[in-house]
Length: 425
Image 1 (spheres, rainbow, N blue to C red):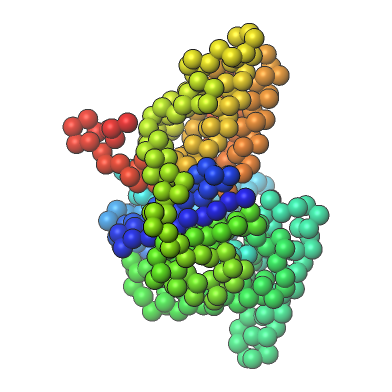
Image 2: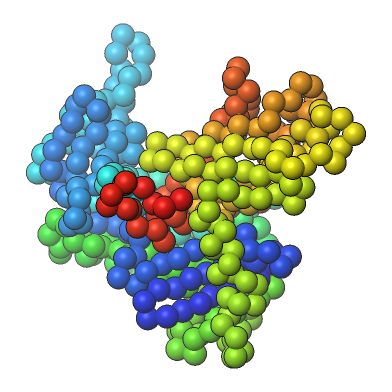
């Protein structure tokens, strides 16, 4: 079970997810530096780069944003693929967009380091139960939903969507169509809840289209929810037993938002009135300090060394002072098993993304390597962010990726030193 704590101030909102008394995730949003992920803009193509199969798009931010050909929706130039000598080949970006062209784009990655935001023209709008895909017509289902329920859920949403379109037609309006992806929270939802999500998402999309028609390039057409609201939409699930917030004003705002958009979550909301700061309940500020450190101690005496660069993150596992097992092979194996648990937690807590290389202590036995990989996969299965493990390389390193959309904890909280260009870790 998990508890969600929301610490609000005029300057920032901090959210901690606590499982069994230990913090597992930390989310921070500064009032004047909100992220852009999920935002939809009226963009203008500033430059097309055929050699990189990408384009720079002006969306009104400080730096031009980046659009790769793979993130162009098929509606741009007849599907994005052409037939050649009996085969199908991608249409190059220079034949699909041109300088000065206006495009509706959505931010899929925040600016990180020297890189601008990454964009897509494949628009998606998230609700509590569904993700609306206005340019598509298929119904997808989250892989985390039980396989035996997927077909029936898909059919229910298909029927509810068709019924909503029929109502519009009967009223003389144009059917909206579009596709949907059922989120994990939809597994036990009733038809009324699903239909409400469909209406809300389509209404949101209609407003975006209207603003796009009236607005010049560089205009923000749709801003994603703030962090506290995203707690109700994205983070609260069947494992959540409470959502506590320490601000009366924000509690009232969140309660009103929940009643309108996520009524299933309102019963979880609690106003915290304690004398101690809410984050002191679980020593969260001390956990944040530890999460910014390079070294992470394991209970057995082993430790991790976490190094984050712009290109990738490396994690080195060491036995340290652990000598508890009968032989050295068992010592290594047990340290690596404990490290797999610690690594999964650190990835979530530090919000590390992109390419991640793990240097477990060398193991002589194949069954030990397989067991460590299995434990790592088991722990990462709890991560709501998509992860992919490639396994051990010939050099004995584990390669994996974790989807990166927002800044890591270190980039959020630490400033770059002007002397050494590092972050004091």
